[in-house]
Length: 95
Image (cartoon, rainbow, N blue to C red; front, side):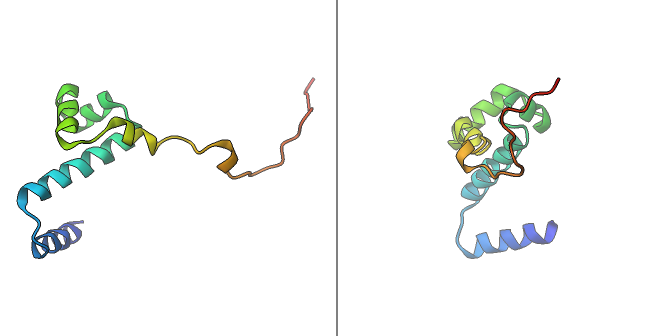
């Protein structure tokens, strides 16, 4: 992981990315990842990050990170787009 980070920093530096832009993008991606892993639950995400929920909400607003955007990626696809894994028996009743 350390090598990957060093490589990323080198790429960002050579591309002319400013420090404030790099920090902003890192924060945004990090918060998005934690929110996704907690299925959009801000309380759990804030607890995992070791910050207050209000601080998380304020930081998200400052970064332009929308909770709706995070949750949109978590929704199940419509039934028509879900893969079918078995045969559905209709009219079958037990007992």
